[in-house]
Length: 268
Length: 262
Image (tube, rainbow over all chains, first blue to last red; front, side, top):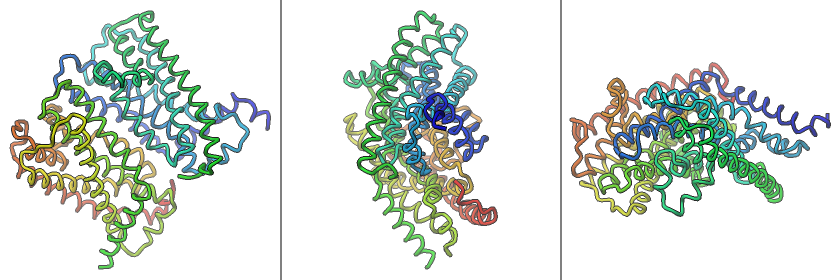
């Protein structure tokens, strides 16, 4: 038994399996499918029609549709992942989880695994909408490059979500943080307009979020950029992804310590 | 009168809950605020009319965000706290209890909508100069009430499902798109127009623009008072359906006995 608890891979896998089972214990699969197909469609539509109305020659429909197709990932990788700790609180399971000797990193990364798969499916569907409904031209696209962009962005943004999730250990709810970062990416990450439009002091914040590199790389991949041309952006995104994951782990330990010392662990 | 007392008590309870945790205002403000900012950034150098157009849309979205989340969590929170069966077993019909909560949420919605308006005005340094202040306020308040009526309709359906949170999140953008909160609905595909016209806030935001923008050219042929009339009829229709739906939901919830499941 203790061997299992001390094996991080086993803890990771059982945490991932449990998270998926727990999700579908309350979420009707039909509802999940509706969410999978519906969320990105309306987000892309909203910004595409806004872009049509504003009629800024520098921001094309393609620019907005591709940006939002990739950013639709945020609902899963930021919002859902960020809420992991908050939901453990709501269910009354956070204390049991934290008194277990299991590796924290394995437990919480495992919890996020299903959302990585969910995110990949969400973005794939969103890009299909971009092509079929919003007429984005994929004739020159580098599909392998685009697949790499989606994969790396999903991984990096899930790391970002986990970092935010650590706040949920200390705060009464992680949902507020989740909501803020669900939408702030629309403004900061070059999703709807180039990052250069932002005031200079805001631009460093943009480049601290992996999505910024992802949206730029996705547009290049759709225009047919080779893997070599994408490698700089993807490398930077991976680097930021690892950095936020490490920061997330350190924050997690810190907020766990704070929550234990101040007795706020089960406050929600 | 006992029913009215239940509504007043429910209103006070909802106010107390809000004041105990006012940070819940943030999620409802952040989306419309960010979306209004995105639209204004897209303009690059927006004219005062463009700022007002986007900000009015942001205000409407702020009110909708609040109504939607309040409706979605109205019963879901009771499920989490274990108080939902106590509410259902109270002698007052559910609609009167939800009614009190809805009135409070509508009040917070005004604060929410005004916050988005004022914050955007300060950031973009454009004074809030509306063409006709009183017509603007009338349209603003009636739009809020129509959103509250729509929220009541949704909240009745949310009682039946354990996935209210998912539905709540999923209904945010469709309403922003369908009502033309940030663009005229004639940009949408023609076949979607009847859906947009069936939403009272579509008429509400049009009336708000008529009252606020001196040279509003994209408005519906019905004009300001036509918008107000259609919005009011639709809102009354939503309330009527909600009353019926709450009775049906109450009956069904007692029959299936799965209200407490979450």
